Length: 84
Image 1 (cartoon, one colour):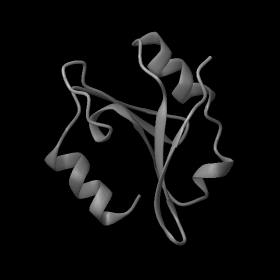
Image 2: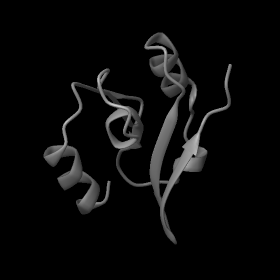
Image 3: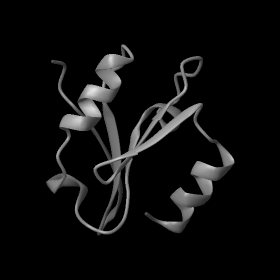
């Protein structure tokens, strides 16, 4: 996780934040901002290669579309899972 993302997670904490399979799954029911309602890839590695299944399941259970953010060599990237 980038230092800036770590600081942002602390500055704008989600109501619910659960680490699962290399993701930090964040959910705040009253907010619509992506940062408060998206999964953040933890640690090093390519977010593109990570399994999105736990992310999709987490957000589907909460009635939201899955959105995942991760670091890439050319900057930060968000990927939204297709609707199930």
